[in-house]
Length: 269
Ligand SMILES: [Fe+2]
Image 1 (cartoon, rainbow, N blue to C red):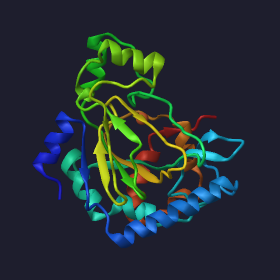
Image 2 (image 1 turned 90 degrees about the vertical axis):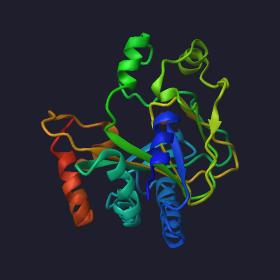
Image 3 (image 1 turned 180 degrees about the horizontal axis):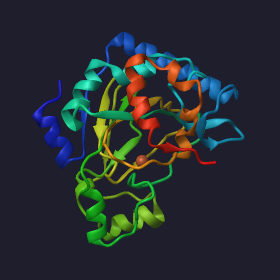
C-alpha cells in the first residue's frame, strides 16, 4: 500500500523503493519471461523496437514490445494490471488512465555500457534558462514510472532532488558535455531482485552497467488520461503497437487503456 511518506520521498527526493510489489512466484515468472524475450531478440526472432548496445554482436540494452503477440508473454500485461501496481498508480495519478510503456532494461554481457547523465525530457529543451528549465520541471505529473529488478540491480544513479531545481554549472557540463563525470550527491539505487523503485524521470540520472553483471529490470509506466488532446505522430519506439494484431492479444482489462492511447496516434507514413 502506498504511504504518505512515499509520496513525500517522491516529491522531495524524486524516488522511493518498494520491497513487496511482486510475490515470489510472479518474480520468477517475470524473470523467466524476460530471459525468453532477450533470447528471442538476440537470435533475431523478434525485433519490434530494440535499443542496441552492439547490434553486430546482437547485444541489446533495452527491449520494447513486451506485451506484443510476437513475444507471447502474458505475465507483463498482468504485471501492469496487478493490484499492487494499480494502488500506486491510483494514489499518484488518479483513476483516469491511458496505456504507458513497459520495456526491459538489460546489458551487454562482456562490456561496460551506459550513455551518461540526462533527464528524460524527450524533445524538450535541454539547455534552457533557469526559467525555461523550471517551467518544464514544474509541469503537472502525467505519469508514474517504476523499475522492477528481476535480478539484483545497481545500475541506476540519481541526483536526489534534482527533478525540482535548476541544474548547477557542474551538472550542466555533465549533462551536455562530459556525460560521465561524477556529480556531488549522486545516489546509486540498489535493488535486490524483486524490489522496485518508483522515480521521477525529470531527475538527473544515468545508467552505469558493469560488464559480467547481468541487468534484467522491467521499466514500466502508466499515464494519466487527459481528455481533448489532439492526435500526433506516433512515437517511433511505439509504432509496433499500431499493428493490427496487438489489441486482441491484450487482456480485456487493458484494451480500453490501449484504445485511449491508440486514438491519439497518427501513423508516420
Ligand atoms: Fe533516462
